[in-house]
Amino acid sequence: MTMAKGSQPFPRSEYLRRLTAVKAEMKLREIEVLVVTTPANITYLSGYTSKSGYVPQGLVVSLKDEEPTFITRRMDGPAAIHQMFIDRGNVIGYPEALIANPERDGYDAIIEFILDKGVGRKAIGLEAKFLPALTVAKFKSRAAESKIVDCTNAVTWIRGLKSDLEIALMREAAAISDAGMLKAKDVIRSGVREADASAEIIAALVRGANGKPGTDVASFYLCATPRTSTCHIRWTEDVFQQGSQINLELSGVRHGYTSPLMRTFSIGKPSDKIRRLHEGEVAGLEAALAAAKTGRTCSDVAVAFNTTLKKHGFEKESRCGYAVGIDWTEPTASLKEGDMTVLRPNMTFHLMLGNWIDEDTGYVISETFRVTDAGGEPFTEVPRELFVL
Image (cartoon, rainbow, N blue to C red; front, side):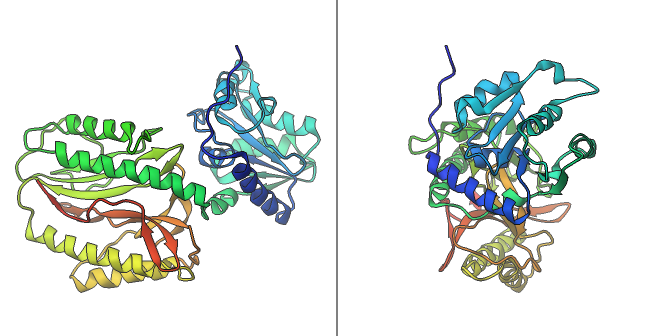
């Protein structure tokens, strides 16, 4: 029995629209073929979300072909046929002999495909900064007649401007984020193990919301007393105590798309410092959303937040947020002072206002939003409260 096509999160026309934008960028850079190796960019251009990126693979986009060709490990080929919008004939599986081979690997299969197809003789684009130096050198050596052009983040910047279909999917992810955070409010209690609470919250993220299940488990951070000054720690073997503070960061996932959310919980009365910090952060969050209008800059958003927070007697050292979409972070625009990226409608950001002040003080709150002419429009609906349990 042949592998059947799965249901597609987007119509074929949406993927072709994205490919058209990428090909226009390729023409500007004067390259004939682009090898996309970043998993999130492969997802964006094909619908593929299988976790096979730990071995060499590449989506080859050619100006000559309407559809790209995906070259991956043979055992992962059926997943690509199932998930990708492209024709099954454009999925090529390379043999197991290229796995754990000290001389040759899957990138050799990609290079051979390009050379055999007779494309890229003038210029080949690579996401070079995300590839091992030896791999880039291999392309330069084996495709010696071609110019190798660094196209790192070329696709990622295109991803930054979301279609209405993508916005709809991020709203679905946001509803799941809400469900996970509300589950946290129910299960975090004195005497409960961090692991048990985390299991319940993650289960809610998988079950989903509004009839839409989570399709993956994103990064999940639960930083409880005495680790509230940390930002990227998982649950531990500890038990929540009366007086514990819990900083939680999570996201629902829909076909690769995320809408992250952060909130702070306190089992019992929080300290006056944390309450004051919460008030300042919420005021700053609202100022930042008001500033996130079409035509403004990332820097404007950061200035609005930082200025407001300082009026409440606090400062935030880290940036205020970043572009978000597939696989959480998009490594492009940052909500920080000095980033002059101009905001456009349907750009999406995680307004990440986690503030780790010193070794015994940390607090988190965030919203994922889209840029509109009227300001930042949040996707999630959980109240901006310091949850006292």
